[in-house]
Length: 110
Picture 1 (cartoon, rainbow, N blue to C red):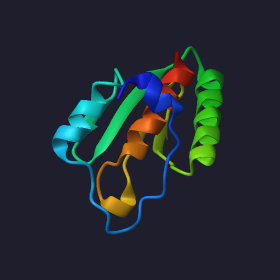
Picture 2: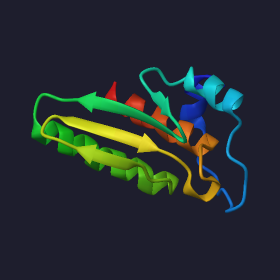
Picture 3: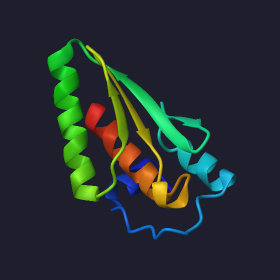
């Protein structure tokens, strides 16, 4: 699945008790979102900005994407840095939704 396909997709409901992506599938999707790293049951990326205002504008834009997709990351915000971390709590791991949102956040940054 190419990044452009991830950008066209919408997140879908992932029922509690569903299975997380297999490691091989997660690793394959990770190749489609440069800059993101897999950390156990999450994917994460740090974004750097010139100042606090730009960092906060980015946070608000990520919040808008999250609202549209109904899939929300954890974010750590500093003066000029934002770390975004995705996982799917209902599967206690990664789902395709995490990669869809990560691709959209990356596109927002570029």
